[in-house]
Image (cartoon, rainbow, N blue to C red; front, side):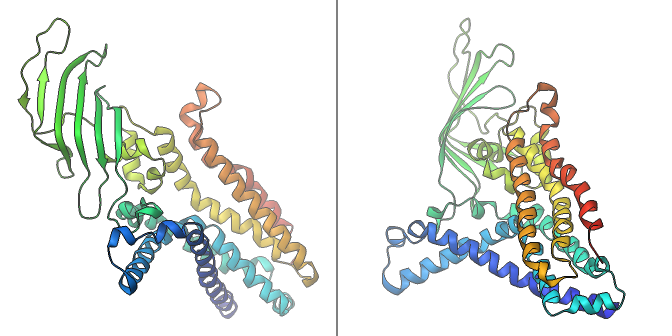
Length: 381
């Protein structure tokens, strides 16, 4: 059995590498065609011409998709092993290798065991990618196609963002962190309010605020603080202040702006944001957290669902088996996509609100998990 297991495993891994290259290349090629004008609009930025500009453009595009390919692999991680397993078993059936295996008294389920174990092992690869590699490259991953050749995403305005203490912050421009510079804000105003009746108590203004990741504070340039804003108080003269008295972090500001940002955060950071007294994007944070956990189980269930479609003793049923494989895979991935969408929407009842994202994350497992036993039991071996 070691020879047979080694043969099946080697064939599956070869097809896995081929499927990975084909699917990722198709994804990149399609995205490149759809966004060609944004990716190669570099004349005004570079100021060069001729071969130098072309080489710089190709280098920037290669850098863009080199980082995006990590996210693409994570997104395609359920599909790649299915494609590799299907081609492995279809090839063995076409060349009558399954007939020889069955004649030797080896059950088809035993033949598929190396594929299932390899899929379970390969599914672990996406976990360190999501928890360590992707968070370390967030500035690069958050770039739009029009940001190729730049070091950061486009800045945006912050309008009346409330922190956990009830203070309101306004900034003319927020610059997300890059690989070489921390996050910063330009022309910052912070209105400190009473946590109970929300009446203004103090006002802080500064020309610039820069995030200090070591001390978790915003360091101010020419920061000024004035108090006595209540109707029955006398406003004091402005005095210098070195740090911004707010609990808002760059992650919370970016999350307030973009929902895609939360998909790149590690679970440790997601738990920290959920523990904040008043956080933004709580529903999306819970959605990403629970779907990150169930992703591994979804990969295993999917491979177990599609293997019986192409494991057959009769080669003439391969065409119908391939159609059934695509149908089952589409139904399962469609259910996961639908549940991800529903997890980001309000719960139907207030009682389900705290558990709604977790329920939607585990719904595909609960629906299709029992179907695995039915599908495996129907294999004729």
